[in-house]
Image 1 (cartoon, helix red, strand yellow):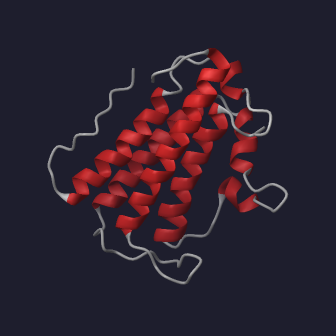
Image 2: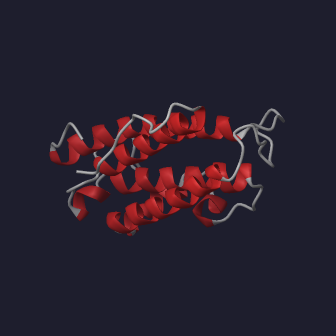
Length: 171
């Protein structure tokens, strides 16, 4: 089982925020442990054909990319998100079923390590290069909090999908 903790090594704000983000990430990985390749690609909810374990892990990876690299650092949008359209708003979820889950998880972990370094190199009050929809520039603290919320919400989806595809609960 993926080791995880929600108890930070110190009680400063940065340690608490990064510990909770890592805890949410580790929980996502734990919910995928031991699943078969076939079940990782199954979409058990009739109204949500993109809701697969592979799709959700891919989505989490690309959401972090979007918030850290595109919004916070100001880089140009690339990867599957660059191909999003009104007819295909979540290409990172649709195309994920073509990628083995272990590879998706490895890419997510590799990227998480990069973003741990990015967070350690910037002040929490540092402003994002790009504005959100209302024109304001959020700070790094907000980005981390948003990703904790996003990852935790999708952990609920991972939990439901996992139970439906193979009956496993409690990860």
